[in-house]
Length: 177
View 1 (cartoon, rainbow, N blue to C red):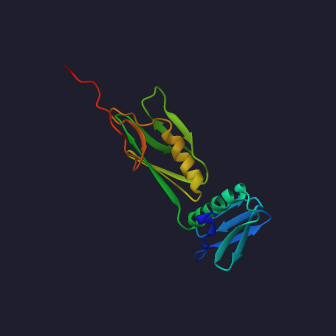
View 2 (tube, rainbow, N blue to C red):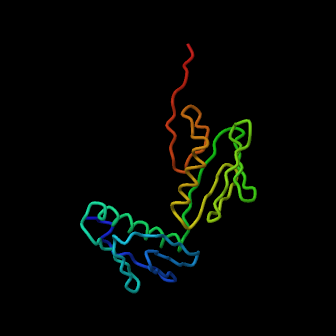
View 3 (tube, rainbow, N blue to C red):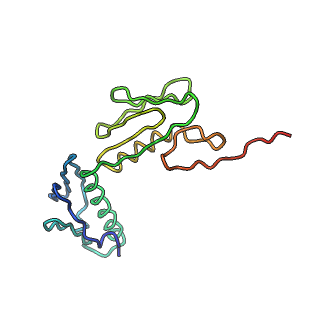
């Protein structure tokens, strides 16, 4: 039994949720998100709350029950307040800037690295902090992970791109005799 799936999901003010033909659509003050959902989980929208019930007791349906509940909660939260992730760049000569539809990074390579920004995201780069924000939690996290993977922080000086609250475990390095 899914503890997350059993909970009733509240719909906040100024937010509309519709489920038609296997597509769940959430409209809010910031925008609209939609997602295709399988018919294995029953979705009931009553006024300002949503309940989910699995149609069978198979393992796959019980797994989808909590997953769909989390997806719906994230969609509702995203159309009310955008999700944000901050990345910190550390290292001498490491820079970032937004040029049009791409993020341009100088990461110590012989060439600048261009990363295309998805249309649903808003990306800003100030000094050594890159801020990624958007309605869809998955797209925000995926883009932040893609940028971080370009230059992971190294353990000796901590140079690279890391999350805002990520702690880089440092190694001691060489000892002189």
